[in-house]
Image (tube, rainbow, N blue to C red; front, side):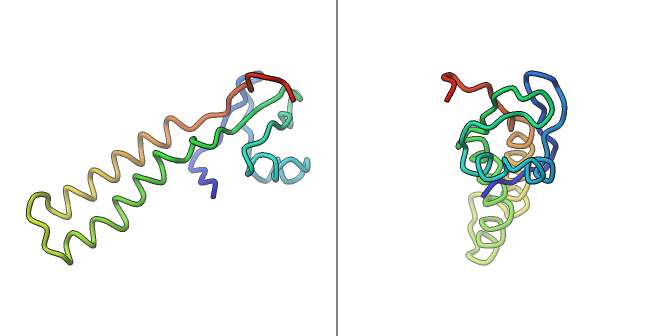
Length: 107
């Protein structure tokens, strides 16, 4: 599942590419399946890589799932607050590393 917490910018024209805009133009399915799709503004070929959400998803998992579980289990080597902070930092890194790419080969 694609999680977007900020608008992604087209590397060709610099304009924001949003899910509603992609849905309006009929390219949302290709975006969600990590297939090559045209920019809704400049028609340049774009790709949302499959790994783009990995760091973001890992951060959310650590902050939302592991921190409460560590508290419940009484894990002593790291406090739940530290686990939550770690998850938050990973999530922020994930948000800043999400980007659209120009595909290596044109399809």
